[in-house]
Every structure is written in C-alpha cells, then in structure tokens.
Image (cartoon, rainbow, N blue to C red; front, side):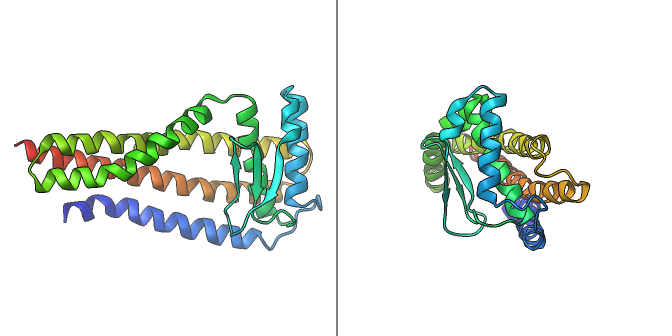
Length: 229
C-alpha cells in the first residue's frame, strides 16, 4: 500500500507526460513548416552550421538515417549517426525533433560533460536496474539488510542516469531552438512557439522518468531501514 501511495504521483505524471507528448506531436505533425525543408534536410543544415560555428568539421560526417517506429528519433554518439523516424516529413513536429537530435550531435562534438557522463553511465545503469529488484526482493525474504543495501546501491546507478539525462535533454532542446532561429529555418513566432511546445512535451517524459526513479529509490531505502529495526 505504501509503495502505491508513494509511486502514484510519479505514475500519474508519467501517464500525463505520455498523453502530452503524443497529443502535442499529433497536433503539430499536421502543420507544415514554412521553410519547406524535410526533417532530414533541417538536421543536415543544422549540423553544417554547427560545424562552422563550433569549428568542428566532423559534424559534417554525422550520418542521417531513417529508423522504424514513431518518436524513436535519437542520436547515437558511438556511431555518430542521427536517426529520424520521419526524415522526409516537412511538419513542424518532426523538424523540432530533428533539431533536438542535432542538438545532441553538437553536444557530442563540443564534448558536453553531462552527455559524456550519461554515456559512461549506460552500462552501469543497465546492470544496476537489472540487479536491483532481485537483490532487494531476496534481501526482504531472507531478512538480509545487507542484500537490500546492495540492491539499493545498484539501483542508485539507474537513478543517476535518469537525473543526468535531464540537463542533457534540456540543453539539446535549447540548442535546437537557437539553431533553428540562427539559421532562419524557424523564425515566425507561431512556428517558434509550436516547436517549443513539442520539445517541452518531450522533456516532460524525462522529468516523469526521473521522478519515478527517485521515488522508487526512496521506497527501497524505507524498506532497508525497516529491515534494520
């Protein structure tokens, strides 16, 4: 019961975030950008602009690829590939998402510290999230507080990953808006506002994930403390 009460706010926020991002995306996926460029072309132009402004010619070598699914867009720092789910779309929603991913590529080229930290945390966070629950559950049934503590430490890595993700995503969105305006691709106030709404809705999903992770950690700590009494 305590677990449900503790996680209820995070669950409600996660459900709202999912609804918000999908409804906002659906709304602006129907609105064509006045620049007339596709999401892939916008990403290419932003990378070229970043190559000049940052003095990082390697940005021109970032590959722009199509990826299956919807809202599966991402930048892979390992392969230097920017993957878009709708590369041929001229909709404001897809242009905003493409600009956001280009923002990640610029972060990578500029060696943005939080991005490097997040990339380094990936294997540790994955292992921690896999081991945490079995360790904590085993410690609970075996009445072994040390086992629960070990699970908490493992889960802390996953929590750290979600928290580090926040500044990475917010910064990428900020770079995206700046780049779109600097290059003149999105300048009309209505279009700027539309892109902001798309990016803000997407950012909310990361906030919800971080909130859920932190509250889970709080619950695990409470279980650990109760076992020590």
